Image 1 (cartoon, each protein chain N blue to C red):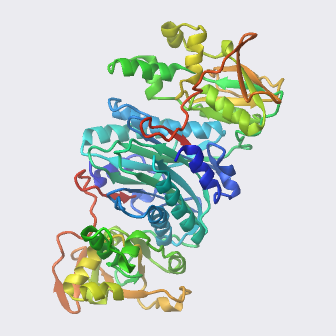
Image 2 (cartoon, helix red, strand yellow):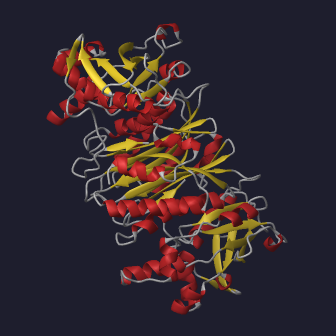
Image 3 (tube, rainbow over the protein chains, first blue to last red):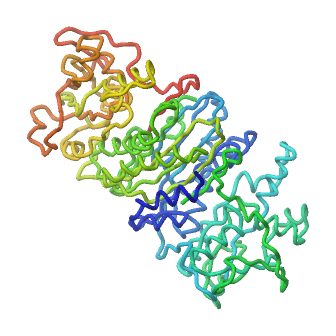
Length: 320
Length: 320
């Protein structure tokens, strides 16, 4: 069963309004934004990743979902796989602690499970946030809205590529893959004004397509405007191929927001260091996603991001 | 790292009052009782168990934690492993649906993950309940309180033993292992009056010892009073050996409540069919747990239940 089939099946009984039709990254339950993300060895992290970074990443990817809804971290429940390697486990929990402390996320409970040695490590976290004055869904954008991106894309995918080539690779790109930064303050500033918002975790093009589809619009993204880091361009340049790589790489934990045309996000109370860039528009009709480079149309790549194929040979994951 | 070490490590930063010191089965967050239990193939269910019963069990074991705190089911978030066996996955989700529908538990979100074929299936659920007027912890009992048990013990462990001997075994005992019934209504009726309460999932003796230890008391349990089902006694009789098996078997999802002496639970608004039995007392001082058979002391068995050894050769799990 693939992810789409599973969600379709779950929708038959997940009819409570809090579920938001299982079409969003988080539930909205009585003023609380609730999300759950699991991460698994070989899927979201590499067996050789430092344990502390794995613990950090588990918390950060969940906080990124709260960021995408403009919520403030309030509580977390941990699902913990313990192993026979106490040093690894201890470092993992230190990473969880570091992220919880950094983002004022109280850990309030959870469970432990010990699996046989050959089983991949799997960790889960349920993160609960306090909703802000508005909790934008994926589906509220209108034709005419502009698409804005908070953060850069491509760093994490390039860091992963470096690690797959050389397990000892290090640097900012690898850090970006291992220890993503949730854009909480930016999300809170944008949420009251965003017609639609989500975090970008599976690849910008794939996630932008989802936002447009949920909103009943089409999205046009100008690859030339994509924010790339200096570390990224130093490695890959900023040509079309590099930009397509960045737009489909995934694990960015950037924010994608649709704002009404004319609203300048720099007039909002964004954190001083926020990188935010207009990357496209929403339109009525046509293909759900089109990409351009300046004024030139660009053919969509075959793979827009980490699709949830449900193929055990290519482990993948998604959330609903 | 074993479970106790993991929890000790987590306590260093899980200092929010909602965490209840990570010493309870659930967190108490702003009027909500929140719990998470994972179940894994080969640990909480057998590879040959019908998929629908696995889905049911995932929901039921979490609802049992809510029952132990007297909470009313309010919302659930699912962590779903999808596989290449769509028929299995579909049946699993039907089991989740059946349990959610039976106990009015709205599914509001979650995530999916696909693991390699050789990895054991792991499922998680975060269950959120509305707290009642009181949410008893494990630790509020006093010397003089009586210990009451809702439900029977031993059925599930005996059902598991039958399945391990013969994979085609069937009947009430096997059903008890595969499709436990959370004692929600009884928990809600008892919670306002219980000085301490918890669900019995890891073995009565182990869980009673935990309740006594958390309460700073000692517990005395009379094995002769243990409620055994007709199916159980038909197989094993009701002698001392059978009673020790039942008291240490685990997976019962019964409720253990400490009530003030003199309070007759039959005066409370328990569901008509509730089986509730006084099984012992709490005392001051002495060994934390003692067992007797009538007036005769009985030596404690070496293993009180499913201890969380964190030994990958014996996969186990617990919650905090």
